[in-house]
Image 1 (tube, rainbow, N blue to C red):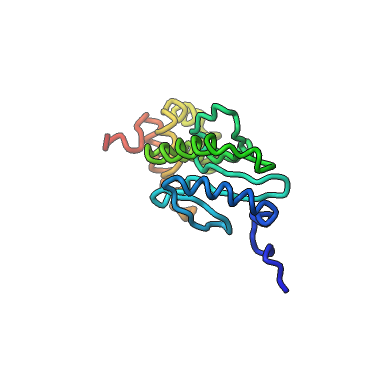
Image 2: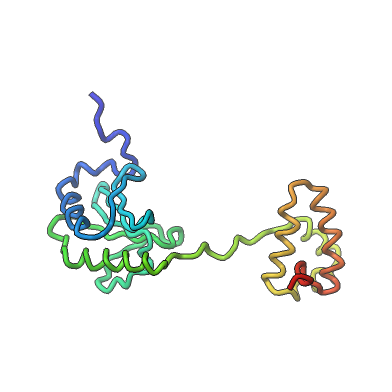
Length: 195
C-alpha cells in the first residue's frame, strides 16, 4: 500500500500535526478567505490572491503570510524563513495546540486581508542590473565614453544597456553600440527626443 505522504512536497509532515492544522483551519474559516490547494497544501486566497498558507513540518507547523512583511507583528511572532531570499513571506510557527491563540491569530489574518485589499505588495525589486560586455569593452578602450556614460542618471544608463542587450544577435548589438556611442558622447539620452 502506498503511503499517502509520498507526494506532499513541503506538506509531508501534515499528518503529524493533523489536529493542530484542523484547529487553525477552523479559525481561518471565520474569515472571508477562500481555501484552495496549491503546492500540495491549503492556501487561503482573497480575490484569487494568496494571503496565507498552512503547513506541517518536521519540528513545527506554521501559518505563512504571503505578504507578511507588511504585518505590524506587534507580538513578534513572525519569522522570515530565508533571510535575504524571501522578501514578503513570513511564517508564524507553532509547536503545540496550546500555542494557538485564536484572537491573536485572527488579528494577524484580518490585518493580512486588509493589506491585500489595500493592494500592499512588494513591487519587484529594482530592475536587475544589466551588464553589457560590449559596452564595457568600448568604454575600456575609450575613457571619454566611460566618463560621458557615468554622467547619465542610473535610469538613462539602464535604458542604454537594455537597448544594447535586448538585441538577440551579436551583430545587432554591435550596430546598436555604433548608434549609441555618439549619443553618449554628446550627452544625449537614448529616449531624450521623446521626453
